[in-house]
Structure formats: structure tokens, C-alpha cells
Image (cartoon, rainbow over all chains, first blue to last red; front, side, top):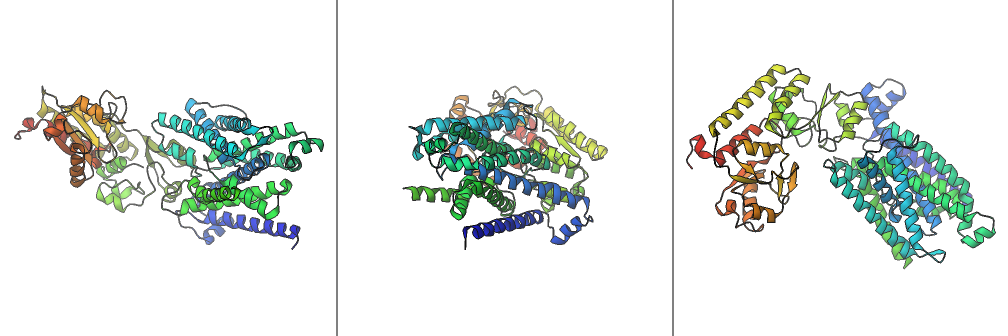
Length: 330
Length: 256
């Protein structure tokens, strides 16, 4: 089987899985519904309540989970290429925690307006996520190379600090328990179409930009000097990728809180399956990430009578995987 | 979407009209057989929607984002706050009566509760000696009710002084050191059952190292039903009655 057939097969499989995931998500919930009810909806015979449950509650949630998963996986794929290390991910590097801190800070200070099409929360999440990733970048860069231990430790320390500040801010507000769970462990419980509409265009922009720059990411993999010699504007490309990765992480965090390990596991699997070419890795990782989070959310909301935070599910899958990778490295 | 609201609705004779309650709504016992829509901080929107309610009564402890989401789905949501004293209970009952068209029943309920409250206050008269009390929630460290809580108000009405009153909060975690310093005359333990109460009492005397505190040494430790006292509903008047009788038995013609 040639590499091309293999990729096509994978693409078909992922699309099939995603479609099945959407179908299951729309059909499953605390209120019992059958495919026949869904068929009535398609034919326009469903009752108002059913329509709301199918479209406004379940479908919007599934679409949002898919978008967030795609954004996180793409952010992870970018960071892994950027740091040339398969253990980088927005959660491990501390970007997610930083973004969460920004969002909570915006809430606590009561910021309302920022950029058009971007809430104050989203903007602050982006700014502080970018701040954390730049800090980690500067601290772990030694003589033009990244030492993996420094990178991970700096990321974990910066993330822990950001999480502690987030907890502090939430603690200062008395009505904070559900907020704390939301911002620190993630949830799609209150997903709606306005959130989808806020995230989707930015995600599309980031995906397009990363595809456009994917060739340069391939050059960076050969080392900055070689890339420079081959005509890649290394400095600018690196900055662009850092902004993209933070933007993607901030988008996810501002609508769903911190969801760990998606950006770690998914790009890693995809790289094993289709190789390290970023032109393909980016879109495949996004598709797979969306599918992964779609199923994680399905599990999170059905496994127990009351919902689990989705971060619990992704960490249950991702953390052992992270440990396995760490073991392999040694 | 709160146990105290469920309780008030039942007291107004609206039990059969309730479409869904939270999983904490266990009083009156009939509430247990009503469909559950989730918890206080995580009510399930889909379940609420499927019941097709004519009215959703929420309270301030339900997350604002959930309330807004329900409103965005065109459900009429009425949000209530819990008060910081018994005085706020009667308007709360009246408002629930108003939105459910049970004004008369609500008026009667409020009047009978108020009459019982006034009876307690009259029996107490103007007591001179006001014992200093500490109220503790069993099971989670030394959580107590601060100066902004409605229990603080009830303690004052029962002719006693809450040692945690200077704390400007509803619920606060009190340190054992402070209790030793404040040396309360009596301690009330909010517990789910008599057995829990007995356990908590022993714990206070032994593990918490509060054996030297006056209340513990004199055995003035009393049981308060947590289920009644932790809900801003009609049974708060029972709590007031019980507390007043424990603090000033002489005023109720009981032997000291």
C-alpha cells in the first residue's frame, strides 16, 4: 500500500468517524430520542422542544466540541513542530493555563469590549496565553536550541503559576464553584451557536494561515540555519507560529475552559500514521482532534448521571500517553 | 431549581404542579418522586427543556450562565435571592405566590409563620443574659455562619449572640484557635441525623481539642437539623423555635 493510499484511507476513516460522532452526539442525551425522531426533524415534523434539543442543545455542542478539538490539536501540532519536540502541547507548555487566567481576569475585572468579533475574555485569553508561551520560549532557549527538560519544566511551572492565580481570582468571588470547575477542567455544558460563531471564523483563519506556512515549518525542522539558507524568513515565521498557536489555544479556552492533552496526543498519533510533513499533518491533526474531542465530550456527558468535566476524560487518555512518551525519551 | 423553592411550592399546595426539581430537593418526602433535572450548580438544560415547564424558578446559587441560557431558549425564568434574615422569608414566599398565582395561600403561609416567629419573640421578651453561641456545620471542618447569613439573624432573634457575627460573610471557615479565644457558652451542630450529631459532639470534645471551651465543658452542645437550617424556607421558624428553647428554656415554662 503506497503512502498516498494510506493517507486517503485515513482521511476516509476520520471523516466516517467524525460523521458517526456527530450522529451519536445528536441522538444521545438525558432525554431519550430515537433516529426516527431525528428523521422527523429532517422532514420538518418535529415539535418545538425536540427541535431545540436536537439543534440548539446537542448539535451546537457537538460542533463546538469538534472546533475546539481541532483548534487544540492544530495548536499542538504547531507547537510540536516549533519546539521540534513531540511532547509540546498547549496544556503542557502552559498556554492553556495562561489563556484561562486571562479569561478569568477579564471576568473578574469586568472588561466588556475589546476587538470586534472577539470578546474581552477571548482577547485577554489570547494575550496572556501568548505571554506565557513567549516566556517559556525565552527561558528554555539556550544557545539557539531547546533543551527538552527546561522546556517542559518551564511550561509546567508557568502553567501551575497561572492556574494558582486563576484559582485565587475564582476564590475571591464567592459564587465560584461551578466557575472553577469550568475554567480549570473544561466543559461544553453551555455551548450555543453564538460561541460556535465566535470561534469558527478565527479557527478558519488560523487553519488557512498554518497551511500557508506549513512549508516553512518543514524547513524549520532542518534547523534554523539551514532554513534561513533555503530562503525561509525564520524570525518572522517563528513569530507567526507562536501567535497562531496561542490564538488557537485561547479560542478553545475562552469557550470551554482548559482541556488538556488533546494537543499532545492527537498530532503525535497522526505523525506516526502519515509522517512529519506539516502540509498534511496540520489538516489531518485538526480533523482527528475534532473527532477525538467529539467522542470525549460524548463520554463525559453520558458515562455518569451528571456530567463530568471533559478535562477529566482527556486527561485520563492523555496523561498515561504523556508518561509513555517521557519513558521512551529516556 | 433549589430545595427551599421546592419546599415553599409544596407548602403552597403546588406539589402536583412541579415538573422537575434538583437532586437536592428531598423535603417534603413527596419531592423525591419528582423528576430530577440535575444539581444546583449543574442543572441539565436538556432535561429542563424536555419537561416543557411554564415557569422556571431559579435562585442566586444557580449559575448565571445557566439562567441566561434558559432565558435564551425562551423559557420564562424567575430568579430569587435568599435573604440574610427571617424578614426576607415572607416577601420571598409572597413573590413565589405571586408568580404562581397562589397569592392567598402565600399570604396565609407567611402570616402563620410570622405568628409563630412573634410567639417565640414574645416568649423571650427582653432576655438579659444572651449566651454566646457557635454554630458548626458537621463534617467539613469548622464551617460556621458569618454575620451576613440568615442564621446569624435567627441566632439574634433567639436571644443569643453569634461569635462569628463579626465575619462579614455568609459562611466562613473558623479556626479552632478563634473558638478557644471566643469561648462560646453554647454550640449548635448542624447535622443530618442524631447519630451524626453524636459523632460531631464527640469529635469536638476530643479531636478538635476544644474540651476546655465553656460550651463543651458544660455540655451545652445542641443538635440542629441541617436539612431545615440550611434552606431558606418555612422550616427556619422551627429552627428559631428550637434555638430559643435551648437558649432560654425558662421563658418557655420548661425546667432549666
